Length: 343
Image (cartoon, rainbow, N blue to C red; front, side):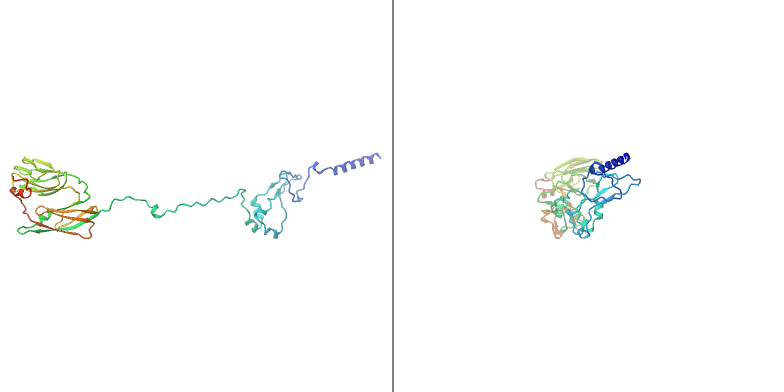
């Protein structure tokens, strides 16, 4: 009898444990059991009975029909399913895995994986630049022009013309706005065989001319040209005198010992100078456009001037009349320079 009472007491104790509250004891879940899709707190820990091999994680989500999946909108996509693994804490499944398992229609309408709203930058309206605005501005000097023509020597009655007359001619140009200053230099006129070599010389304003004596007798170089008078005195063999010309224009050079010796120096205050060829053709280069004075000078003809406006469309033909003999005796210098007198 006592033995039956003890067995009955044990049965009552076991029956009281069976009706105790469920939250008092941990719930043992078999790895093969299916957990219903219940929205549980994220911190809920679900433990499984120990097992030797660790089973794979089970994906739990509410079932949906194929018809309802075709009309899923972006804001109606189901929350990320919960992954429950043995001995681990429930965590949301990766979004990439969810999209891979969704139908094509729902996946294409799904929002971006980032939780931040994509913001499109405001359009930037750049200023419109034309080709002329982009091209660099190059400052170029004013255009230069060339002037070509021909000098025609015509002999006056009683005069004769030879090749040396054309070689002695000079053509020069002076713009109305003024010419730049030429660069002066140093030049030489030899005295040899009782002659000046060369007998005609064109020099820039401010240049110096040296007169060496190559003869074994005396020479005396001088000039009575107004504004350019000078006298170098007697010079023996090997000696040399010099003079600097500071006034533009014609300067006649003579020897006081030998009256037949004569040279002509033409001093110009412009860099635009040309010497005609044997056929009379000349070419002046790099002239500024606009009006100016063109001059042809020849020792036996004097000066011929013409006012022109550059550029010209056709070459010029300049007719120059020779009126003087080649050599001028000292006594006739007064006809060229009335204030010089005779010497």
